[in-house]
Length: 308
Image (cartoon, rainbow, N blue to C red; front, side):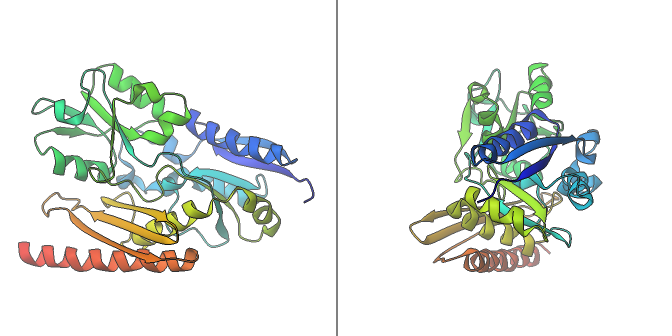
């Protein structure tokens, strides 16, 4: 394949730059020339309010999409869980790379695991999903908002603002901060967000040349799993304003997916759904995710009727 020159649009947080550098190194190893275009997004600028109140995860990708649209960049590297379920017209998710650890991590200076916390202890997270799942595990805890990039969050913990915080294990591992992880939550205990731990590469839909090059980086088992997970979120209207978890695993050609919905008001109990099927491609994985979402919707409706 002919060598190309590419520009990668990226946020300027340390983790985002690591992710972009990782893709850059892989493309350079394939013989391409790659530069980075660092950008600050609205999501990086608004730190005093939760994402669910100011426009959701799309705030982390909008400026990068403008760079793609204007031709200043050829591709954008994202944490897949930050990518909206519906991309704007003219853009496509060209590639999903092999997933890092999808689990949530417990980080604390004083307590080895969630179970060790005294009643009323303060735990930091701004994810509505994590809030709902933490409440289900420990209704006695005080859960406080926690925004900012990874280093900012860790500093707030170290400054004593929280007894512990919950972060994505993948980000800590990628930045060499694995030693900060005191424990990981297994999916049975805290189901991950759709796409958590995976990197997605976004391009303009008309850039077939870039899509062709990126196929070498696509990891098929991860692609199938996240296709199902993102389908759950899409059908449920998944956004930062909904506590929703979806996690799929592939064994052979059988995909298993579980999903959990939490009530944003905390009134209704958690609702769960799961399914498995043989999948051949992203389309069949998407159908499986949509089925699980419909099962969730039915269960949510039943819960609401029972509580009304």
